[in-house]
Length: 569
Image (cartoon, rainbow, N blue to C red; front, top):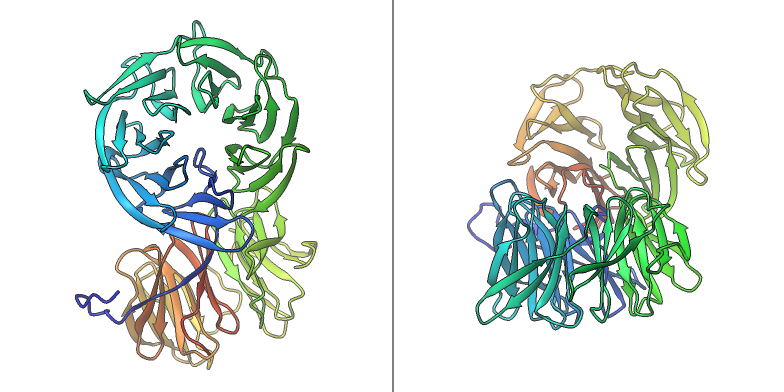
């Protein structure tokens, strides 16, 4: 960032170390790269390229809003991703170079949202499907990085098309499907036209959720919201068979994959993973996973495959014994708090909705999960001796858990009338300080008032000043003994500041908020020295690890980001 335009030209970039997160709601969003060594998946506006056998991660950043679909070309050379945007605005498709990990082209035509993307088998074309307020299908030339032709995706009297799949053998044929529409398209390159043929399903009216093409193009299979599978012939455009007749898949067939050896891998909205065959579609092998299945991606021919669910779990399954291994987890709801134990950066804890999770810092692995069903955890803290995790819940209770086992140690009932929203522990491990929805703090010594909703407060280590921030985007320094404001800084250009932490030495502090940026500040100068770009949701909390090795920030989209702390202490 050597642009001399801004007065903050001295601001350096914060280095992103690791990301814990996966948006499991993107249909077929989890992909195994053809090199069989990497998983590729979306998180907010970022695409993660995660090595399967090591901790190595790469990030593709370029989308201005959440990624809604992802495709990888058969050769593995290209990645394409589409995003959502505000109604009436153009939504970008980005074409990426996989090896160089860089942006090749932005393709802008569709409005509102990119619903689905598919590459032709020889990397010649990319087909894209616009969202509900766009409704068009467009074929792009990859060599020219330009649109060849487009057409309305579905007829007038039917719903939207939501899925697209290319032929496995020919670059000129693809299939779109959705609410009451199944179409086989032929690309007529000389005339720059695409011609659709409507498929006939007789009396069966179905909404298609997922689509799979046989390796030799002999048939394609459609998974429906009704919980059955339709087998179609792309040449005759007729229904070959459908099933299962009874015991349909609960919550719909949300993912479907054809195997080279014959048979299908099917995932349901209720988290059931099944291997079955036409025409009965009865389960030959099955396992139950956590969360509705949104992706099934094969490693090579499918001797091993990966499954992604809506609860942001990624499983590895070997086909022969059909047993699952959980290889990655993360929060699937807004993360409300993050905290390190006193004096160690080896692990940290986060909370989101009903979950408290403990993570191993260097490997990004989840070590422990504590769940209290139907409750929301707002805030957590480690006791100074590390023997308990104290947590604040919306039912007005404070719960303490053992950090190794997750065992409930004790409960403080009726701590606050309207739920406990903030919590802290004292250094002698004897007291807990809490704040509640009705605005009472249990220990009141000095009161500070300002025209803002305070979101965060930090004590300077020497305890003569505190810094606060909140919805007014200002960072204020206060004198502790008389509660006067010493100085005010402009903390952010847009949106509230929600998280703040100060180093043990009190030389630097960090902030994060609704502008999605992590900022490192010099305490005495009151100036930003480093900025971290990587979050796509509002940053809810931020912490500097003990020993100043990392900064960890968490956000409303469930992501946990670990940054390299820019100064050596």
